[in-house]
Length: 110
Length: 116
Image (cartoon, rainbow over all chains, first blue to last red; front, side, top):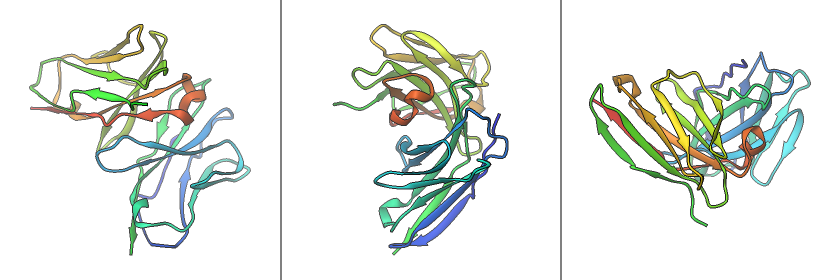
């Protein structure tokens, strides 16, 4: 089972780019990497998913190196409303044991 | 379209009791997953149901069980409650099961269970 490790917390400022890295040294061949965002008193919300290289959508980018032992969620030009906990998730259908990271509490300051 | 609803939102029980939590998925979604969230352990996967069948199960004791009805609504039951069962229980629904549905997984607000 892939275990994920993330920083417990991060601070940044409005307008900056924020990169959150997740380590998953034992990721399996079929595992995908997914990131979620969670605000207080709400359930998590899907941000982005990838398998290798780079994936980009309207809110974030996900960078995955060739060895796939880590991944980096990149949030461009953050705002105060991006203050939340961000989770890294590794899993696959062939071995459906979803392993969630402990989450990174991101605080954006004005 | 209405989101995922969970009832009750808050619940207080005592050790040894049992509890049943309910989840109504988004209309048309046939996959329902349950998660336990605690400050110490984070988010942990409990089980997933699709078309009334349990497809996957996390590493939880047999006291934790669930089921899904023909209308896709799901319930989870915890018997013989322990203090450590105090947590936020989240339900998520998606059109497809497994990883195929994970990028379209929508979470409810959760049920906050407190065991005294």
